[in-house]
Image 1: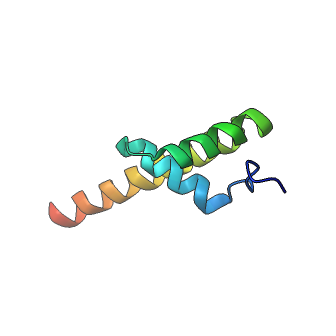
Image 2: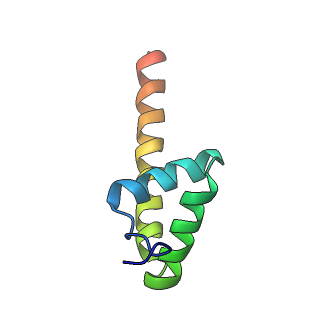
Length: 70
């Protein structure tokens, strides 16, 4: 493997990238890794993980509100 070639991101790295994108914070290295992976494999893994992270976030927010407001 050459110096410029990196391993493909795993499930947790994709989830972390989605979480970072929800809050608008992503470092350049991860952005470039994600962009290279999207160009190579497509957008589908990021879309699926984005929907999963969104529903997890909404469920967590709903649970917190239900806990705080009787």
